[in-house]
Length: 611
Ligand code: GLC
Image 1: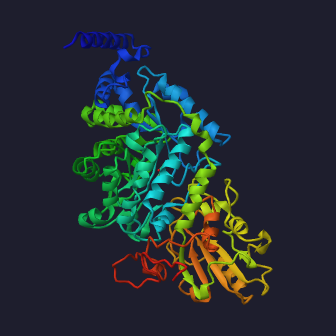
Image 2 (image 1 turned 90 degrees about the vertical axis):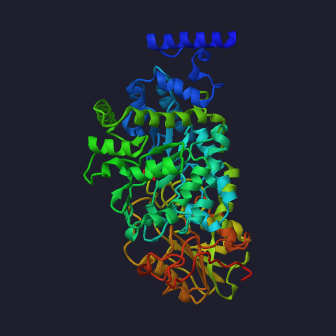
Image 3 (image 1 turned 180 degrees about the horizontal axis):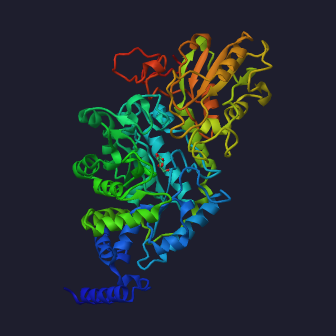
């Protein structure tokens, strides 16, 4: 060995001694401590760090509290390795800068530990950095599936990562790669489509989020979720039971995760749902044998929010559930509030041999590898140079183009579309002038909400900008005031926002009465009527559609309603195609390509203005 190596080793040993004997913070001369030396291979750094960690250090890496239930001092005391914001859980005021301040406060607490292991901060940035007021809100996945543009989706990932980076947040619980097979499921809007090839092709969002090799200045960790079969539950029951042979699970629901692993996704989140009656959160075969073994997934597996509580079907979690989840292969457990109890139970389980130390070390190795790869040891604090990207004109322009590409024209009688710039247009409907409605769930609040929840352009505002004169466009929510003096009427209707559970429907997917009433009021004026549907899934229009002159599926277009107006006025050609089969009514569900049923519109249907 050269004398240089000797010196290095000597320094390393001295450094290590200083570390282990003093137990104090790592010496300033980080070069003398291997895991702090960025020139070393990540594997070496992980080995060195792992060798210095106590059981308490390791357990702290495997639990993820929610920000409301932990303070910086406890992050230091319990060596917590990650914190999350659940949907809508934001600092006050909810501004990009206060997010960065919050992140840095938590991070500095993590760096105050003996080994100075940085924490990761996770959020659901599922259609932009959507917890942050003022962030760009992109179309939800079902609309991006309709756009059929993997390159566009990659660019959305990049833009989202930039907006996250400015606030410090470095871990995104996205993309959802679910394959939605029953549109009654309340999370159909989070699916890129009903066949595995669609979410698989849109896994490019991972490249956008993570950048090349996670080392980019605006790289964040992506999460493929929810593993596996969440979109295949009986009746579309959210968190329900996916009943199918393994061959079908592998053919329909697994391929998008294979593609995500191939693209180097850093983490995988386990689904609340069950497969043939076994909760995914305890499914060792699928998590360890298939995902980590057969698919050779090198990243780490995170549970869903309080996901381990559901294993035994009773509220709260027990030591048995902690053991089952960790031994199934879950590396980090999302325990928002009772995280102290989790640490106690897991420590007891390790000391009693119910969870082997090898499992604890494997979990830590996986988690720490991603922290080193992300460069968190070298650049632990928010990079505020990206704050200006939050809600930037460039990102809003991208969101507008994405909204336009996601529009699917389903009916266009007598070429009522595109609208003429000089038309005298009457607009009605509760989704026409409402950012919250057009953005859907996971927008500032967890379930989303109607109203002016975040800056952006509503659909009718976009229409006024597209028209030759804004005064050409009149808006009345319920349609009152419409008369024959107008050339055309547009009803923008649809679903109120929802994120989870509340979106499940067991009815026949009909439109809301208020929407049907507004449309009939427009029809009574005996002028052409175009319906624009703002929804997270197909709805039952079979008995109504023949009375309408035009129908556009707008999905959940996000903050840039101008993208919808661009297609309505022909400033952008309609290129969108259905990512899911459109049923005649809810009774046909589940309905998917190739199942022999006769839908209203098949998968891939979409009109252009040349048709
Ligand atoms: C939620 C969702 C999951 C999300 C997680 C953290 O319950 O199921 O998609 O990433 O909790 O908010």
